[in-house]
Length: 407
Image (cartoon, rainbow, N blue to C red; front, side, top):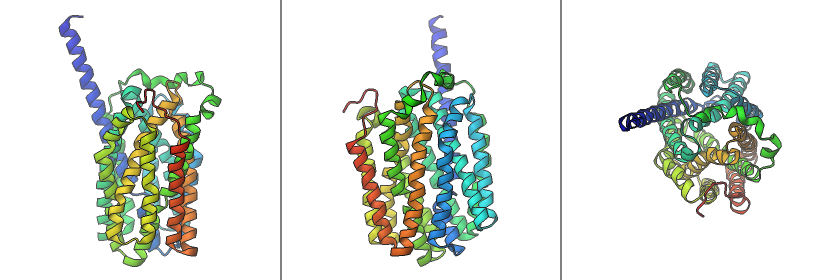
């Protein structure tokens, strides 16, 4: 090739990479916007419908058990599929239907059906987005890409949460879930903007059988990080829902706006610092970042045990942003470190997601029961202990998984 042809080829390649990057930005933005309807807004919705904390915890636990049960099969299925976009489209349709079921009526059958459908859809969407990202940029640039994913996801989450909070306050709690269903439509359409040409990493699924499953399940890094994920979700999953329920009982409909702002605050932190965490993961290694991020969990829970006043809730959500940024950015990076080029990336993500699902399932039921029986202060003490366990596990047992750690 002539120098001009080489330059033209490089320019074409760079243009294609930029187009794929922008498409992934939009996909992450819209997917996060759809997911904003599920979470603390459910606690507000059900509390206003006169559900007890125990019943709300049960409903949320059913959803997380469904998420837990589907994580590993979903990961294995995505590894075996050629089209990650098709998997993500199916997942988004599931999110749409789950939101509509929640909006129909706050009855036990509808809420449980919505939670189960949402959980199965999420178990497909999260690893599918990570797999698309890995296919586009490869392992060398996965850290910065995951940081960028988290940034656009947090922006989508924040804007959607603000809109849902305003709609819930102005119209009805039910309208929050209608909006989530409506947002699923552009999220599906955005998948068509991703150019079909991706690097050869797209086809690692065909090499998955080269790595025996037993070798993956025995990987020390995977086992320890799965334990970290379990303790992380055990501490984090019930924290804001407990705060939301307490504020709803005390402040009525005003709680919807406060919780909406409480969701936005950590998303701002994620948007600002996710790319930095992604870059630092390649410089300092993964482990030191995990320890610092996980330490925010017990600090936040102990502070909430003192008071859930709005003046304290909103600043404390910065700690939620710190923990969420580290966990969200590093989880797919560590999964990529562990799976390497084996084609087991989504299965590793599924195993980590399964562990997190177990922690989240226990968290909502445990904290809800403790709050009903002994009060919210003791519930926050239990969540703080789980956060401390996550920090100590990362500090004492987690190996450095970075291929070239500089620590």
